[in-house]
Length: 223
Image (cartoon, rainbow, N blue to C red; front, side, top):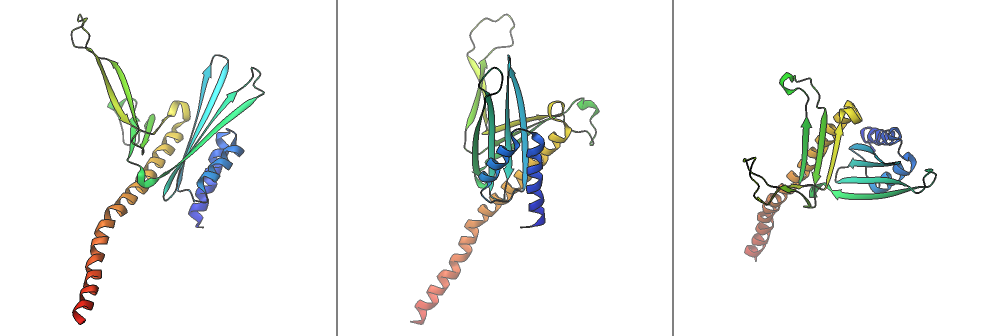
């Protein structure tokens, strides 16, 4: 085990502990899903939603290894008004890096007219697609005439995505935005390297064939 990989594993455990969302449970689930693989990079995103008197939290942990993207998601649910009875729902998914089709990054900057290279993005959206799943956003279509009352049907956009995480400096802190950017870079590198190796495989196979054929041919001529 190399020191770099060991350091990343320690960093992953420390990030889980800092998130404070059932850290012991979450760490056990994440490491079980890794199945002995060493992490190269990770991203943890914790969200809290308020529904009247109830508070709902969920956390998403993305861990990148040399050949897999391991995704762990945990939701909690309050079963009584006092909040004494809680339930946690856990799901994990392991996606081969070679199957990832796209890694899309969206940035949001404030006051772009004053942009300087040192300025940090205020918000980052990371979308990863691997299964071919698509999201369809529909809405009524219109025209340029504000007085027009005709039915123009519907219009919409189709986005290919399997997971989307939105990280903002206001809600999560500027370091969280930088962490998301670093994770996306690591994911793109591993994905690109994997695709390059797969693209070279047919050429390598073709290069092997003449050697095999020439051995058979020499054997035939010698007889």
